Image 1 (cartoon, rainbow over the protein chains, first blue to last red):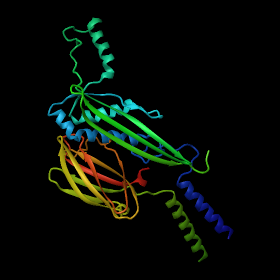
Image 2 (image 1 turned 45 degrees about the vertical axis):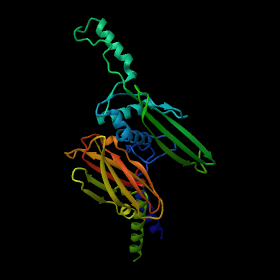
Image 3 (image 1 turned 180 degrees about the vertical axis):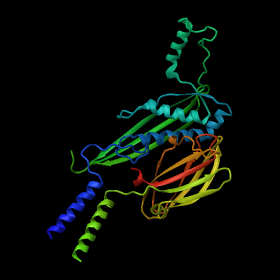
Image 4 (image 1 turned 135 degrees about the vertical axis):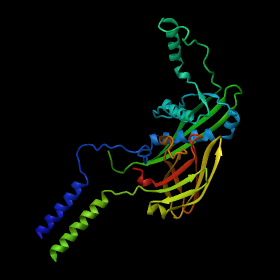
Length: 200
Length: 140
């Protein structure tokens, strides 16, 4: 009887040992679109939003009408963060710009790097290092014909141990000449988390 | 006889422990659509998912020079299903275009309900699409 007990115990310990039991943190790469682990805004939410917005903009009939076979010059303004969380809105804007750029439907300018452009042109004109016939002079850049802007907002509700978090990304595309809104869309995300009864 | 019973008990215990510590099937259902010939192919690699959803309809069109696909999925269960789906695109040579920009999206399917999912190509070069559906539990 005692022998059987020890055999069973040793088999159980061996099985647990084989399936992993370590005191150091386990680190592994996970896929980008993993299941949610909190009610906060997570990378997969941002990725889904960027994809949805790019698809919506590229397939909107109003955009086709406004573009009309040309490739208008577009600037993407950083989204406004109206939430209490820190979210890198510039990174979201960059991802969206990249997806739209790859579609080939628009040309892009970036107002946020204008300061660097001026520095380069100034250096080319004044430092004496550049062949003046080849130096780029100010006043030749393309003008933005449309711009994309938007905001992220949230509503948080807590009842007992349950936290309900709602996020809304809203974006608009505006024609600078006419002042008309060519496209608008929004992406809503709602998450719920329940705190454990016992925990630290 | 007693030794055989003990051995069988040990094997059963080991199997149960290994099963409990994780073995998740990550295969899913795929729908391949060729937007040039119009042919569609449904691959049901997961026995579990095959019993939960079925592909009802595949439609495709073009918007602003980009291919678009609409696939209708129906739940065969009476309970709510939590799934993930992703639509990726391939060019004429079968090369996947910008796979990182196409993400798994959430799909909550109510009992016996049908939902149409839509995907738009990333570029005019895309000619073939592939929808992949997976169980949310397999998403880590």
